[in-house]
Image (cartoon, rainbow, N blue to C red; front, side, top):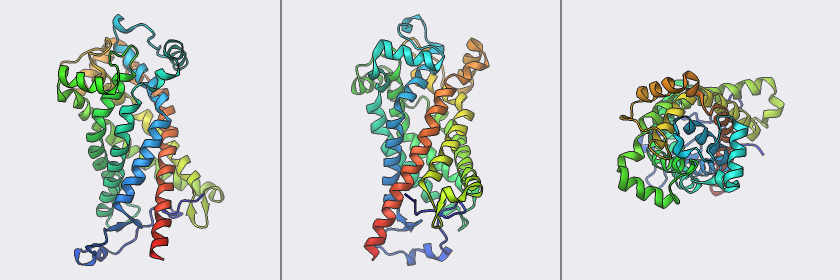
Length: 336
């Protein structure tokens, strides 16, 4: 199956003249179109892609969360706590909780992933349209668009991520999604849901920059090395998007693991024996981790994080492009 939204040079099919976006040229009854799609269609494509990605990879995310949180846990939460090694962590969870232990908190992810990714991709496409200056190879515009998209989507996703990670902890004191939300509100206030927001944005900004830069570079390299496998009828295939996405996700995940550890520590602080911090300062958390475990503590969970983001990015990009392709076909049939 081939995606119909991009060209063989790895850039979107988006070459409008600047005058095309003057207000007088846009019909009131017809929403603005970018890259051949209306923006509500980008939102739907992003929502589907994000939901499929996170639901499919949720067990790996649970492993990562527990490995990152265990370093600060006290004896209050040692029962059935996973080790710092991936294989032993998996066995520990299976023995103590069964398969269901890998899916605690999935409801929070389900509620957050769709809206957050819908906002992410629509903001990204909107900013890219206005910042690219009609240059589809404008990497600076892509990076800035990704940052704006990250700030917007993280505002939606961070509270759900807090609930998800607290439910994922071994011996979590919460009965479920509703109980966690209620108790956090009553015991810690609304601010607890955003204690890690700054860290999340600081982490996701470079993650996005590395991700998109690697994704575009990987696509170009793959098409140069083996065009017959990644391009059909002058159109990029879903295999190309999946392969480039996997490479981009793995590299971006590895580079930003230290900040992800800090985020997990902030979101799980005070729960199940995890350390509590006097401030939400990234520096304070980093110093506490290094003091207790050395610099190696900042890379806890890097293997499951890469195992999550490599296939997750492949799933997300291929799903996103597939849904966009569906809308292109649908729009073409309606125009016809």
